[in-house]
Amino acid sequence: MLKIADKTFSSRLFTGTGKFSSSALMEEALVASGSELVTVALKRVDVKNNDQDDLLIRLKYPHINLLPNTSGVRNAKEAVFAAQLAREALETNWIKLEIHPDPKYLMPDPIETLKATEELAKMGFVVLPYIHADPVLCKRLEDAGTAAVMPLGSPIGSNKGLKTIDFLEIIIAQSNVPVIVDAGIGSPSDAARALEIGADAVLVNTAIAVSGDPVRMAAAFKIAVEAGRMAFEAKLASPVSHAVASSPLTSFLDA
Amino acid sequence: MHSFNDIFETYNWDEVKGSIYAKTGADVEKALSATKRTLEDFKALVSPAAAPYLEQMAQLSQQLTLKRFGKVIQMYVPLYLSNECSNICTYCGFSYDNKVRRKTLSPMEIMREVAVIKDMGYEHVLLVTGEDNVTVHVDYFKKALELIRPHFAHISMEVQPMDLEDYEQLTPYGLNTVLVYQETYHREDYKKHHPKGKKSNFKYRLETPDRLGQAGIHKMGLGVLIGLEDWRTDCFFTALHLNYLEKRYWQSKYSLSFPRLRPFSGGLEPKVEMNDRELVQLICAYRLFNEEVELSISTRESPRFRNNIIKLGITSISAGSKTNPGGYAVEPESLEQFEISDERSPAEIARVISQQGYEPVWKDWDNCLT
Image 1 (cartoon, rainbow over the protein chains, first blue to last red):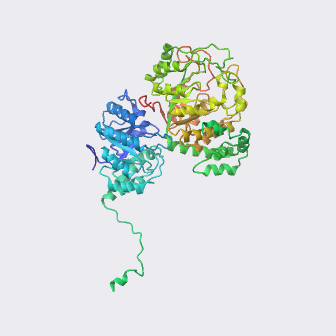
Image 2 (cartoon, rainbow over the protein chains, first blue to last red):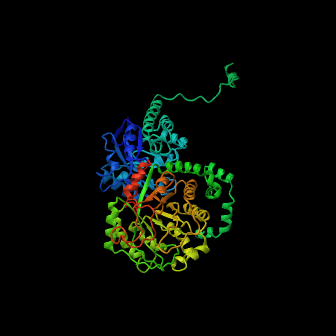
Image 3 (cartoon, rainbow over the protein chains, first blue to last red):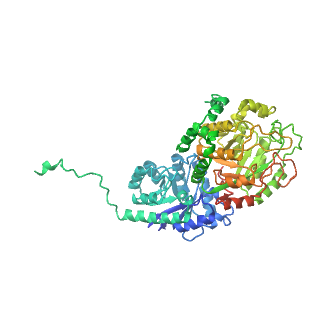
């Protein structure tokens, strides 16, 4: 079981709520995904009347935990403010920290993210920051009290898969907190691969929401994530990349 | 580099126009198969040579828009605060020399209009005025924003271009987005259409997005008024402007509009007509050129066109719009800036969007974020 802060998760597939063609379809897909942690953009929901918000109503399942995100903020100060608002409105101290001052590529700002993580962790938040696949930043975030790290697999929404795999492997090898691959996962095979290399979970949104059949795609991701994790636990046989030489170079030592 | 004007001055309208019209089918095919498209590709995509490739462009535009924005369409509505104007613009119902009754909404009247718009379900409002710096100035905007801000998640403005300090003063009041259309990048024609008033200063208008970028505005909207000049050339300059702004003011978001000149009482006939096929071509060309830019469509377009454009690349739509100050509640019968073509209510448009397999989104910002 995956444990983050005080919660345990039997599903290692985290999901998002954006880009669906209707909130009814979103609900159906998220249920099919088996996801127990679903991120919601604070800017998309009516925090003042959250008991009437269609999106929030559709996420009211006992197994679904809400993970509000700060999408739209541009610096640590705005992020801390948004997190406090989310805590008050949605009654959770979990926060997905997204600070992307660049609205074109939505690249996370490492400096502001570190600053905000330090502050929010001190204030008792369970912080899950969206970041570049930067191993040093991950260690710095651990020191700052982060609950997990969420490095990107490739640019957000790009569906390009694990372009950062070499860095993800380093992050996974040395992390003391759960590693959740957050962005760019385009297909169930990408998700499976992330779990195979030891990521603790993945977060998938675009690849499900924009697919031809979001409900079936969500189910496909569910299976892929389970398979990837099982393969990781079963310990993959190392791929053999070297040939066996016909005239060994070291045979003279046997003589 | 001081501003976009430095780049703009290195271009010659006639040369650009000539190069667009010289594009061939081979240029279009190259543009279609490119993974990152350049300004030369954009020229090919808006050129007459691209007409036979329209279906392919639409397919690509739809795919790219889905990837970035998903199956959602943002809803917004204009709120006209004033029709007072000291400019003469040959194509506009609010032009100084146009004999219409002038009106600027009082605080009470603003609140009556707000109540009606809120009842329609809107969370994103676009404040519109003419240009009259005596009555409708920064202090008026501050007061208006103070009144309006508590009721909306997202406030945009389409008013006169202002100085950097003005924008800096207005952002703390909840101003998120500013739209400022160049109308035309053809300097000489611009002078013809804007013979009097502050708006006749082409360069001040051209440099407005620079000032917005410097003021750190969240989002800015660009565009030209289609019908004043050759639209292909004008839209090339819009793309050039966008390219420059994105690189320089990388913390701002951008949106594009493509209003076609609409009739108003006593107004100008378009010099250049753009038909529906050509407007689709332009929308798709913008999308293929820039995957992240927001594309917005207003009630200037017909119901049939609007129904069908939802899937092709646009990201936001207005509905139920009134283009006269007080049009929702205070003085529904007063003269409009231009005639709208799609009279359907926001609820009807939301239904149309759902029928097309998209979700109408009313709220995608929060006033805690500004």
